[in-house]
Image (cartoon, rainbow, N blue to C red):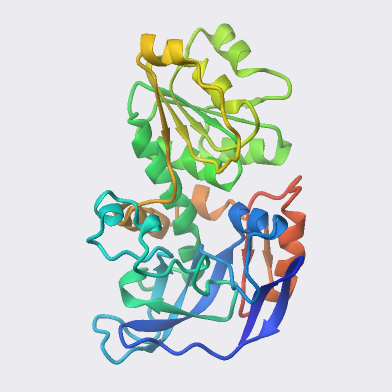
Length: 335
């Protein structure tokens, strides 16, 4: 099969043996796989291993079933949960399967979706309804990440929430927050194209952070935020976000950043603020995301800027380092 593998200095298209299903697994023909920012940065920073197949946002069709597998059939469209979970360790019991050491995480420490086929444990499949395009399965993972972050924010009707950074996860956060009934969602970013996408995703207000600071926006509107979902990883944004929270508000750090942020302890204590991290998702978040995707919500399915072949994935991963007009790119391995 064809697959995109990691090599010194980047990635390249290669021929690999077709995977075989484990006794408790299946082989999925990958219909689509999202090019995630975490993959972009891992390749850019050299945080990969030789021969590694990335890609953890994918859906496809079951083409082979392991001998011990029940309930799955050849030809069935599926979304793939990349996170393995033993279900019994401390991390899994706390809803953090991404920290489980017992099972593989597809596209991270096991071969993922930048390939024509992927071997997947049956326990990591979620069925798509018949008739739903298998490509839509690629939308579930980023929506699950956003669903988890929105839940940690603890918001709903009557609340105002800021989404800071409107890349793929930020855009999905807008969708998840509106689905949770949040009255006012403000999207903030720098890219014109991504701000436009934030409005299409359902943001009630969109601001250009190069022209209006968060503090200026709050001063002009007179409304502080009940929560901020920080999805940008830009330096200084945690401190900036904490400063625009209403009393009792929550800042959810979603973006992976190496910054040692300065946290204002006075407001943290005196105003009862909360700062929490949100990484990946629990199984319930993923199944909820698949159910949402299966409705065909155009805000989810309409986020795609480009669809590229496997041969074009290495160049696309480089272009996404400075995305400019790119919002979300899908690899279609069968094209």
